Length: 586
Image (cartoon, rainbow, N blue to C red; front, side, top):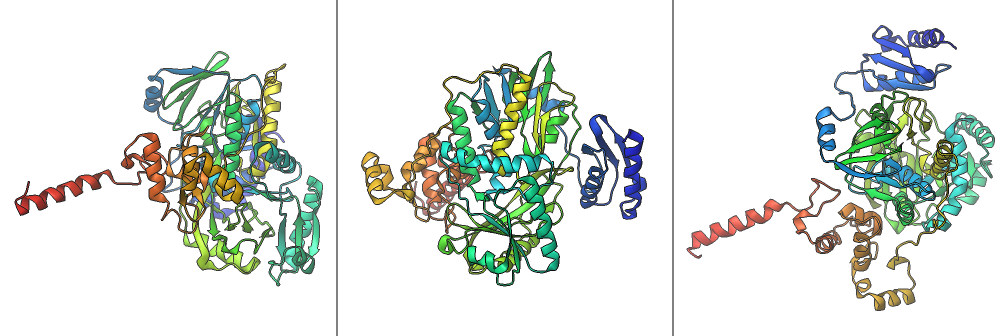
């Protein structure tokens, strides 16, 4: 379809939706089948709705959505003053590849590129890896029945799921292949299950079956007695997203990759065949940039004039319950996917905590990780409907994450169409974590095309040893650990049985844990029933001691998130001085 045909088709779609005020919406077709939207709509939901309508027009390959709505300020690259400030700090280094973003995708790409003769630096604006979308992930390695046949999601989900077994063996992270059920309760649900069964078969999902409710309960007794049918995929699995990301990052570092945390990318400038990556700490020169910036991937693309996609954030809440309900439910339970989400449901983490969710809401703010009443209503009502035996008063925490969605609802994994040397790895929403091994593999293929004759490092390693965990050791092993290091005999976190030795090792690890949250993700100290009520002060003290800083300088998750108020000490001294003055003492 030519340009005029695409625009005409889109205008007809708008005319059939008069509530969107079509006369206020403008569209233009850019190169490569990208449609650019501008104008005004009434709400953020309308912004997203129009973007999806545009993506559904035949011939559209991408959507650049610049629609405005009252109360929402557009987000763009940092201003010239911030870029100039970063440039003024001078050169940091020269390297072959700079990866922007240290979520699971960035870490996976770093791990695979580190196998080759490419010097790689990973930049992350947060204080730790896995601080963005990955942190709010439920850890499900989807089987691949949901994705549209022929899409990148479909191809890479099934391939990635298969690759996880080898990844877990090489990197020593927990992988639980418990399978998943999608439950049906009526005839309409059954129609959806049949549709997704056919889609799963086309996508090559191994072992996929349609079962009766009785057959499903024979495998997973916790399934609701009201369920009459189920779609069963035994290949579905679960990981701890932060353990996985850390394993990938540590293996990348073992092969020479570098990670720079607390480093924000401010601008990209091309100079011949190389790029200057201007960061908050200075300038890195490189030949290639991998854009794995999550919800900010489109902003990074705009830095080089690439308008081929726009990210729209989709927020979801997760609820975690105490391990007293461990093994009440092993497999994931969901309902027939409708709309642009699989809808979440109850499952169990590899550590044995029941986890429910996520919800899914379109939000304008890329940093909006708030939890609303509607999140609780959705997550808890769905969990109670699908599975029995988990008491709501055993919930120990809840939180939200934001997914990085494109309007085509597919991954964007390719070189930039208008900026040589930029490789996009964007729009990595669900099943992004499941697809991570195959995404990284695909990026390697892109680099092999960009660099014919790219050689592997002769001494590159693919194995990584996990940190020692006291709670998983046998009594004999625990005694040996204690004899080796007396700090293994000091339990810091009672809920999760985490020792001082584990915290110290995390602080000085390959990817050092210098915040309370970073220690929590490495060791689980603070993840138990009391959520840090007992171990928090102890972990804070260890961090201060090991980092040689005052306790008031310890943060929860980086700059500005201090645990202690340094003003408290001065107020205490002032009150003491006042009392002494009143009593006439000195």
